[in-house]
Image (cartoon, rainbow, N blue to C red; front, side, top):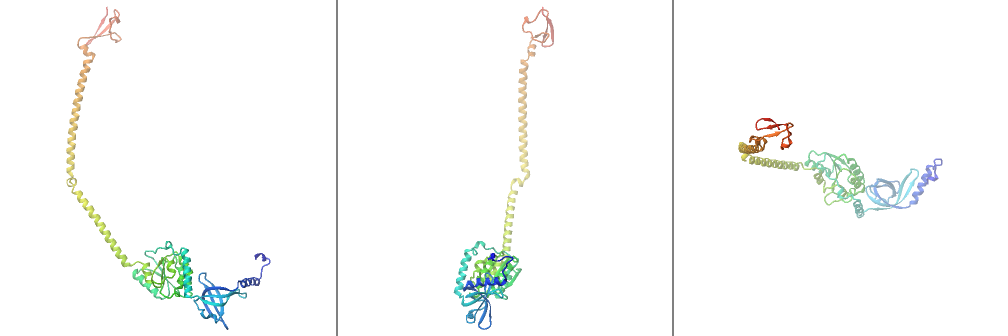
Length: 394
């Protein structure tokens, strides 16, 4: 299609409008589902209304005859058979409706069930993705109707349990065609500003609770980083928001009990913990005192000098024993030395000389053992027991 146009040969606006009109006319009659947001009577037999897709936030203008517009009311969900047409003068798209069908409760419940199966398959109901509520949130975001019983129940019961709790309240429509859009905007506004978000509404009919099973709101809650508590209706009511939210509360009062602790219960737990700590510490101190008393009752602590005296006696005995052993060793060594000295003296040459023998030596000190070793006239030294003599061989 772009080949038919260039920067030098562009299409006029009317040509583009004609092309779009041709494409729309080729579409023919289609069945369209949506929520009625605006209804106004035109001139003659014509009724104008707007069909809105709450999931994609897309609207489409539609027209029908007064006879067909009997069930067309603001907030109603309808299925219409219409032929799209393009109004070239304004460049807008409209739908000429030839048949209108109300979406009944049975069909709504069936669609909710199909949506439930779809979201469950996507894992939006998985407990693993549920975020844990903080023990004591600094601030709580509350999305509810203005001056509603649900708002009063949550605020009153939460402040009775924890008077210091801080609330950021977003008042929205909790039923009708504006409920989904306002709730989604409130969730996105509170996400990241508070520690936990509570979506609360009192009980109602199936039609009243339909906004809390809307896909747009459910996906906004699933994408929320802040933990979300669903407190819609009473115990039997169970919109799909209960499955997507991180925590389901049966009633708004139950939601208040879940988001903040009870100050009285926490004080009681603190007192119990303090008593347990006191008992444990007292028990430890008593046990250590008993062990200390047992230790002090031992003889070594009762009479500390006794162990010194016992050791002193042992030291004296060991010293006496060492002295005796050392003296005996000295005596034995002295006797051995005397015996050895006597043996040495008995075996020495001097003892032989003392018995009258002499040692004959030459002048160079060598001992003469044979007479033939000495020449005539050679001087010899005679070593006696006392002194020496000089002799000459003849």
